[in-house]
Image (cartoon, rainbow, N blue to C red):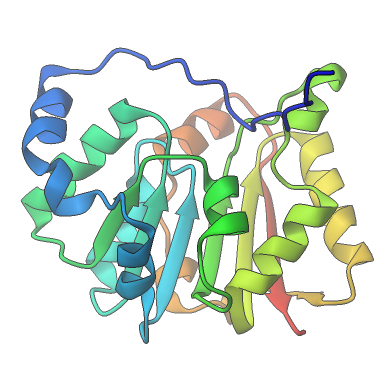
Length: 221
């Protein structure tokens, strides 16, 4: 009997990579990309640390790293086009507080990252997998919320954004059912999270009159 594999929260279809992104991937990979898990834990150790899950084009990731240079910022992304764009810009800005992990965030958190590693974990506009038959691919589930909780420091923040009504409602409900969290407001966040400018994705969503949902949860246990 074959083993049932846990469905991934992404489908790996590498889009077009520009020449600039390719050059950045070739020349800057070793400078910014971490492949050894022990190096990730060392990068986060004794620092105010932020995890950006699925950073896309990296606008938020770069904003935090540039405006809060004493913070260690770890970005996790499976798509090389986004990574290439971030490497190029991070190098241009002279950022030394940013590292990239090119793999599955769920596997990384479940198996490898030490407990209480992050002050904040952000996840902006993940794939909503809108078809009901694909809902099982959604990353935020009851058991994964417990994983997130274990990787946050006491009082740590999970910040989620979505432009998909039923996904946002589902995530909000899951957190309300878990007694280890309390809802927080945007003005309670540190400045590097409170003053994030709209990304290109958000601007397109607003132009299309799609609702933007923000869910901010604080770890209390």
